[in-house]
Image (tube, rainbow, N blue to C red):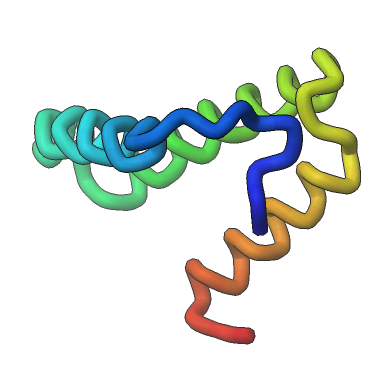
Length: 76
């Protein structure tokens, strides 16, 4: 899925992933299920804010979540 309405900025995605990796490493003391639920709560808030702020449409959010499910379960 391409990122709708995003301004192309070289390296932004890679830099963001690298920073998130570093933050996740700092949280490794928490059990995986706790970390998963905390990340889910934050992702849900972010996606809701993006829809409410009209950064993404509800359909973009829905498609993102479907693709996330496929990636997480290794299907499709």
